[in-house]
Image 1 (cartoon, rainbow, N blue to C red):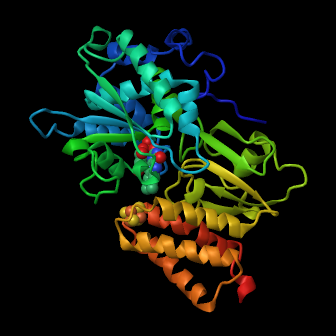
Image 2 (cartoon, rainbow, N blue to C red):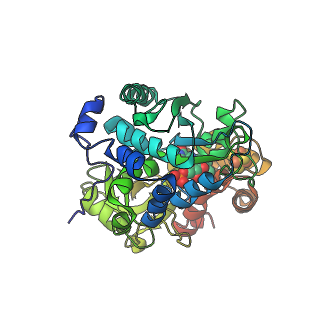
Length: 416
Ligand SMILES: Cc1cc2nc3c(=O)[nH]c(=O)nc-3n(C[C@H](O)[C@H](O)[C@H](O)COP(=O)(O)O)c2cc1C
Ligand code: SF4
């Protein structure tokens, strides 16, 4: 049986996302009112910490802890600015959960963004959106204007002491600009490449000011937590990672879908119950969990629980799941992954700049059946170098699926 708890998708298909009045009639912006009238930034952040909500952008870091650290950070400069940034870059192939939130319920996201910004003491917030998502940028622009008219954004929000301005910033559509320090560089007008950490953005982020960067799905949970309390949220999902998650299930399944499911669900259930199982006549081979940067899961591991577990072997990443059947040409797939990372490597560090190119060349030769002994040794070296010496996680991501294909699918066996 499906577990139907709806926090993020409750209004999907029920209201017209273009009309703020319909969101308000469905109970929208009540959490913002509650925050302003009955809570302090400190009590709100406490609820978020109790909820156990962690980041849905990939790393799974505690949202309450992140917001609290920016809240507590002394405003370092004369202008006293702090910034909140909603990360809507979403360039991972096969991932479209954040865009789906905008398409179906932009005001839920906006309400979460407003509350989070006020919690940390930001007066200016950016929604960083991939430049290719013009429709979603337009929907958000309209939502911001509607919220401004209702005094949910602007000076003296709902006649309170709070002021907030929100700007939608369109990036150029680079995958690396989803990484928070590259994203900050991009808004600052610099080249979209990662920065050295520490200092972390929570201390020294946008324009050198304390900054919280959070994924759109993460933030869409905030209104529910403010309304219902952290304890109620902590009861949903698994102990290790409470709450629900938007999973995007694609590939050789009957019903590809975006499904909101409590965390802790088994991968097997996502495929069988939510995506309708395998297509007629197709036999499961493996699933890739977490988008192009994700690991490969074989049949024997399908009972694994989907949760944010720092010690877990299979990171959830963005929550995208590609189900692959036995008719798929793995060489084609490897080539498309390699081609993606070759294109998206920002070029800042040599291991990734060179490694992703060499990986692509070898993937091409593998596909053509022309792999040499030298290629096999080089492949091991390149994968090791990408995993261990790249400046940022993108280099490691480029090696993940390739390494799993060698180890779990015995990719090179037939060449031995
Ligand atoms: C190469 C790369 C791409 C990323 N892309 C995204 C993205 O598109 N959206 C996102 O929210 N986080 C992305 N992240 C993670 C962000 O750096 C950051 O951890 C996240 O926005 C924090 O939000 P959260 O704590 O709510 O998950 C990416 C990280 C890397 C290394
Ligand atoms: S690992 Fe790749 S994306 Fe990251 S800094 Fe190095 S070249 Fe850029």
